[in-house]
Image (cartoon, rainbow, N blue to C red):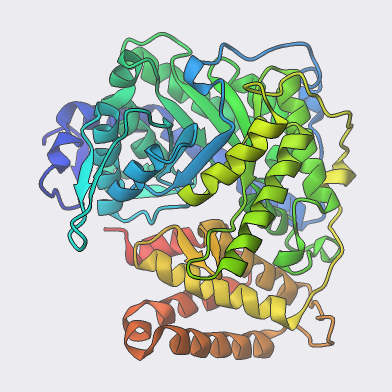
Length: 529
C-alpha cells in the first residue's frame, strides 16, 4: 500500500488488504484533509460549552435557530427498506453476531463500530470485512468448537452501520502525521466498499450517527455525506442517516439537527443510556441536578418521558421517524421465572413506546425480537405512526429538572460493580457484555463512573447517611473487586483485566475535572499503536 501522506501502523493481517486498498485509503485521506479542522472546532465548542455550564449557565433552546423550530418543512424521501422499522436489533460487528442479527427477524440491524464494540484495530478492520461480506451475501462461519455452520437466510434485516462518535480517533491510520477520526475511518470504509453494491440490491448506504451535541455537528456530517457521494459519483441524498438523540444538548436542538441533515435523514432515536450519561456529565457540578440511583432513572420519570415525547413530536412534525431505545433486559438461561420477568419488562417498555407514538424500537438479543414485534404489530398496524403527534410543549425546565428517587449504598455499589465488570469486558475486546441479566454497552460504565464522580463532587449524602467521599468509594471498589474475584474465580480474575478496570475507574472518579469519555484514556492506554 502506498498512498502519499498516509501511514498505517496497525498490523496488516491476511485479508486486510482487501479493505485497506490504495483507493479506499486515498478516499479516507481525502475525508481527513477536508474535514479534520472542522471536527476539531466542533469538539472545542463542546469544551467551551462545558466551561460555561460549570460556571452556572443553563442549557436552553437556541434563539438564533427559532425560525427552524415549528416551521412547516419536511425531510427528504425515505427509501422503501427503511419505511417499516418497528423492531431493530443492535450489536457488535463480529462475524457470528452479524449473521445472527441479519437472520433475527428484525426489520433492521444496527452494526455497531461504536459503543457495542471495543475499538481494537483487529475488531474495527475485521468488522469492515464482515459487513462487506454480508452486503455481498457471502458471509458464513463454522464454529470451531461446535462445528455449527452460520449462513444468511434468504430474508435478512436491513443493514445500518454505526460509526464511532466525533470524539474518537483511529490511531492506527495517520494522514499527514495526524490520526484520522474514528468516525471518518468507519464511515469511509463502509461507504466506499458497499455503497454501490447496496444500491444494486435495492438498499443503500445507511448510517446511525452517535453522540451529536450540536446542529453544527450534524452539518459536518451532512458535508461529509455530500463530499462522499460526489467522490463516488452518486446522487445527493443517496446516504440516509438516523441520528441518536443521546446527549442533553442535542435534546434542545432536535429540529435543527433534522434541518441540517434534511436531505439525508430519516429518523431520530432516543438513545436513553447515553442520554442519562450526558445529563449527568453536562450538569456535573450542579448540586440541584443530581440524579438518584441509576435503577430509579427509568423512561417513565418526568425528564426522561419529556425527552421521549419531545423527540417524537419533533420527528413527526417534519416527516421523520422516531425510534425508541434499548430495553437492556435479555433472556435468562435456565431460570424460567427470571426469564418471564425479563420478557414482561421488555413488553411493558415497548408498549409505552408504541403507545406514545414511536415508529420502532431496539432490542439487544434475537430472543427479544418476537416480544417487541408482537407489541408493535398490535399497537402499530401500519408501517409507522407519522400522523401521531404528541400534544406536548416541552420546556427547558421539563428537560432539565431531575427526577426524585433513592440514593443508596446499594446503588453506589452497583455503579462500581457494573463499571468494573463492563470495563474489564471492554478491555478484553468485548464491547457488548451481559451483566446481571442486562445487555450493557459503554454507556453503562459511563453512567456508573460519572454518577459516582458527581456524588463525590457535590458531597452527596446517601439516604442512609453516608457521605460519598474518597474513603467510602475506595471501600466499595475493594468490596466489588472481591465480589468479582469470587464470582469468576482467581484464575480468570487475574487474567480478565479487573485490576486494570479498577485502575481506570479510580482515575475517572477521582479526577479533579470529570473526563469527557472513559473510552479515550482506555483506548490510548490499551489499544492505540
